[in-house]
Amino acid sequence: MDAIGWPQVILLAVAAQRLLELVVARRNTARLLAEGAREVGAAHYPLFVVLHAGWLLALFLAVPADAPINGWLLALFLLLQAGRVWVIATLGRFWTTRIITLDGAPLVRRGPFRWVRHPNYLVVAGELVVLPLVFGNVWIAVAATLLNIPLTRRRIQVEEEALSDRQGTAGGAGRWTGWSGRHVPPAA
Image 1 (cartoon, rainbow, N blue to C red):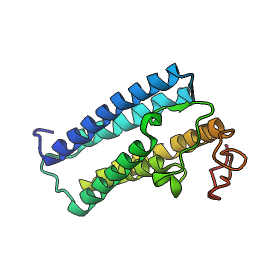
Image 2 (image 1 turned 60 degrees about the vertical axis):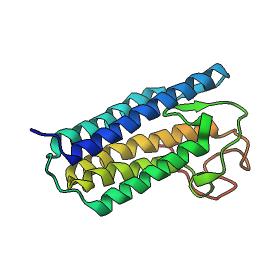
Image 3 (image 1 turned 45 degrees about the horizontal axis):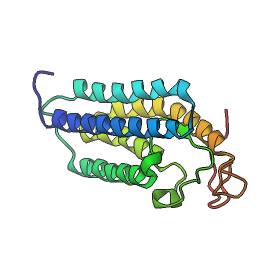
Image 4 (image 1 turned 135 degrees about the horizontal axis):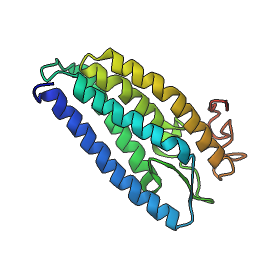
């Protein structure tokens, strides 16, 4: 990569957004832990950090400064960012990048959680595919997706287990949520 072009500007903006989100997540995590919450699934968290940092770095290094930008896919990526903001705003002080559970806190059932049990994971899966395709990089989209699938599946399992006794659903969060009937992936 010899120059900085629009692709790198876009990628730097995404990186800045992620860094800002980490500040918010750390603040929320510290507050929740101070209130008696606990973290579960900490062992797999570094793998997500490596995946997401590697995804952005690979894009920054692999996409030429003069790469064409697909405007339709960029618009889709921006729509995914709106979904990301919606999830963060809906969870408010409970949003973190880690699995932090506060006993007795009700499950969130508003915003995107009315329709989808784990909307943030859908948004992230979309981002990992769409952003590389904005610049025509199919291989990074495929590699990131293939690496993300087992990580996200495991994370959902850990999260579901942590929420299994939570109020807000018939019989807790469990494998089948009483309020929506949506299925959660089975444990490995």
